[in-house]
Image (tube, rainbow, N blue to C red; front, side):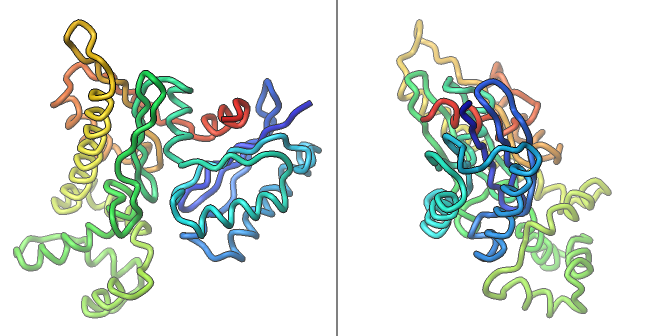
Length: 307
């Protein structure tokens, strides 16, 4: 019997699913294996832990896997893809399909079909598929260049707007909460910490920003709203690119349905609501799937399909 391995390699955690042709046998979760997020030793330990659990709990040897599909952020970064190829070649049998995390989430909602997926977790990305199967994307250029609406964006933007609030003489608790989180004694030390190289983990501040927004901090609320609107803008760019690729039917264009995925859009309602409101302002009849996608099912679909 053939076995298939599906992997969703996120920025802070990794989910694995082992399946046969008909059913999913087991899922396990470990820490990150994405080499932009963790060092090689940590990535290897997390991978070994997951594969060991899969083998011991199912009795299926990883060398007997026919095909694996790994969806990961940083798909254009050589250090990410090279390590994954080498690590899986050493530990897992069969073919390896290595694609972007947004693509497996797209396939989870629209397996091989027309649609748009907006992904926002630790990072962010948007992908859409036209009626002829062509995939187009927007965003996804990494934390220094993009990642709009992501956990990284929310944490970093909260600090930027927090310091701007000082200049504007607006009240906000964001900077105080950041100092408490990082155990820093003063604003001067916070400034130094935020500007260190390599950068601190800004995404770790996202839960604090969400909590402060819920408590009524206007600056925190603005950060979350901006994140959702930025994601909607990128999704709109993808929709417009699909529109250019598809001939209009009876002179009209039916925008593809939109789905969401990732911890931010799954758990942070203000970001998701800002995304939805902004998209519906442009496309009033747009179908939006509110339930967050399960990316691992998209990776499993790809593994079974072999493409």
